[in-house]
Length: 486
Image 1 (cartoon, rainbow, N blue to C red):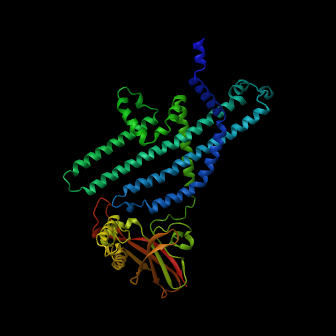
Image 2: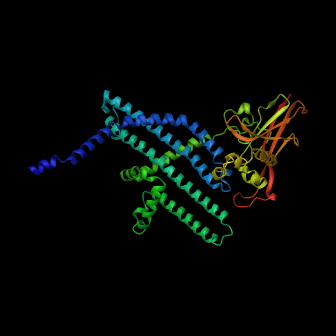
Image 3: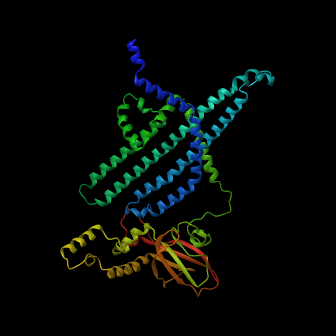
């Protein structure tokens, strides 16, 4: 009896019992949380996709331009791919949540109907023939339908997060792969001519190849319901692959949902659900891209026959200039202001043409400031400013740099190259874009339509793979737009 009393009063069992009762009550009331989270998530997704697009555009435009990371654009490309993939996951998320909301709304309607009457009286239908057995056997009672819809809704809610995190896992691994290729190219560029270069590059190449193979095996195993984990001989090797990619792909976050689904539902059911969702997403994408304007040309290259709002400040709105702009398509005062955006893609060409202009951004290195401070401490007759660069010489370098940098652009009006062009460094007030400002005197132009063309010097070789040389630099048209004078 004493043993029984001790067993009955076991605090561990009491805690487990309380936890089990709490979980059971939470499961019964989980539909309320599901509806709350679903409605709130749908509202946030529907209202934030546009905001995310603006954030993505700002990041890609300002921080992830291919030329913003020196001579290796693959690091920027990996970040761009990640930012572009997130909306796909969000749209999958939104589709699933809408399906879940519809099912939960239908479920609540059935619950309300069952409170009035939970019995289906098939005798009142006076069915004949085979319908007398077929209809009662196939039509669920309201209680059965309530339980079925509750189960399906909860599974879809959990599956939504599994699907989104799975997409993010693939994207993360792909981004890491691109970054690894970037490291190989970076090492190749910096260690060219080194005797150990070939060996190091070979080892890195083998490592990246093994990483890609292991990543493919990891995702194939997940896609085909843990196939490799069941193999007698391969499971030992795959164990380490699984442990490694579980961490870097963040699958540790959602694998409990994954194993619950593949162990409690038929593979056929999971495949059908995936195909249905994929079909819905493809249909949505096709409908969005459906174009009935057969006789409207697709813009190819730069031409004055296509009016683009992005070229004019008064029609562009609160968006980035991206390449160039003028205040309006109508020029009234005889002077045409032209703003050319400073694109980091020009960095390599600027470095080749104007190598002495790289340090004109005015940012003093920490080592230079520290050195000036130490020298001022040793020579008390002078201040720190005496050991810093002369401001007047800095302004001279800025002027020389502006003259050099402006040489990578050409401006034509009605096909005639303008020689009377003066450039100034300028920050556009719309989105604080840095660039160059030109003011042309066009008072001699006749009243009517005219064409402005801006060209920039472009490298025709393969970036980060070939050295820039003068014979591989050509001027290409970056913008061509009409304007009117009166």
